[in-house]
Image (cartoon, rainbow, N blue to C red; front, side, top):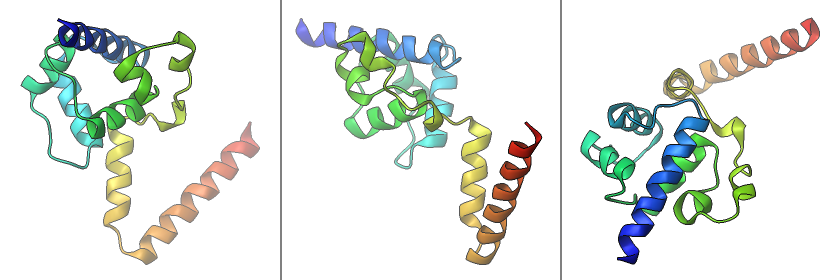
Length: 133
């Protein structure tokens, strides 16, 4: 009985975190796709994502950490709940769109010389943007 309540509670927190991050809590396909872009291990299936959303399963600790980082919430809160103020403890800067994750992956595929050039270009653009505002 306790395990099913834990799964349902996890599901509620996951759905809330998805809504807060502007993702649909009703789309296991979107959840699986966005999760798999960020997770370095074996990809999850849409069926596994559906189980998380409907409270039939809780992901492993490694997957929980990826979910929490993506959604900008503490992994402990996502898994166990607790004080609502803990939810705000996630780092919003750790949330990336799919395009951002793909861009980082592309950067990592470049050789070291091109990576250095790309980083310097980004730093230059950030400086220019700061001067503009």
